[in-house]
Length: 377
Ligand code: NAD
Image (cartoon, rainbow, N blue to C red):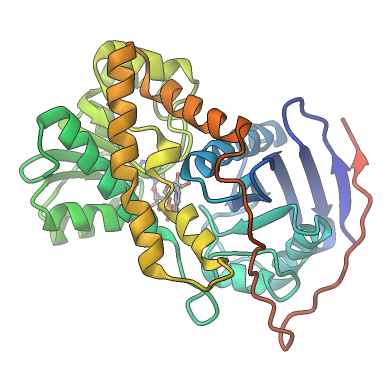
């Protein structure tokens, strides 16, 4: 039996906590803003040290999704979910089904996908009890969004090179990649083929060494990546890594990578700009995956080409943001947030079509779950 609690957080439309002890589920879902469409965001599984840490993460991530959706004009709002658990361990079907029921109880206000600690296969298991999922396995959907996210990051790195060096080519540029997971490994491979010089790091040392051998790269220890002298530092691991401790260590000319919530606080974007380090706002450069999953639910049917073409526009949008930030002497982060807020206030990119969620009746039991979300704060 799932127990629900509603948490009142100013500035957020809905925040709920759900616990099902027998299924081993403890999750938090934050719906930040749905003015442009239903709240959409991945579900992260992570061994959070405390409830406060998990709540802080879900709130920050869901707000980031609002800006990402708004700047990409994909007709969705901002939301996110986190589940307490082991990111790498096997997740039980019972827990995934209990979580699916929690999603179902929100009746489409929240649509989710894979994220750090979850896979498209686990999303397929959740789908056995709820239709409110995207990023489905290729047999029934568009597959893992990570390659699309990586493609957007490459476009973003090219825009960064264009702005800094007058050419979009990464050939001969030194790029330090932090994190070699689903996105980072593709980013590293693409950069290798385009002639970049790579410096890699992952907390999984064995994986870092293997990838380095394949792509002629140097490996540094996780703590050393911040101080590597390079043209571009590409964070593709976990958030909050641009902070008071790391900024004095940076010897890069720019930061452009997929990690969500790279800036620990918004003021760190201003510090970077004063230091002369160009920053590609994370919620724009990493929007490729969101663009792909929203193409998956397009009522006209999924087109990988349409997704790729839209992701390619990240290049031009970033160049515009870099130019505006330079002209007005502001941080790139504040310019990007301003564009996102302008789109929300003027309903630019608001969803006009219905969502084409996959609901094959043969293997999905769509129970209309009605739960009361009791208040606990
Ligand atoms: P992942 O879990 O597959 O990979 C993360 C990698 O980072 C792992 O290999 C892990 O060992 C490594 N790592 C963790 N901490 C590290 C550290 N301190 N130093 C070096 N390496 C470290 O995740 P992913 O799907 O590749 O996503 C990476 C980042 O991009 C996340 O912040 C995610 O939220 C963001 N993102 C991903 C997508 C997507 O489509 N997968 C979309 C948008 C944003």
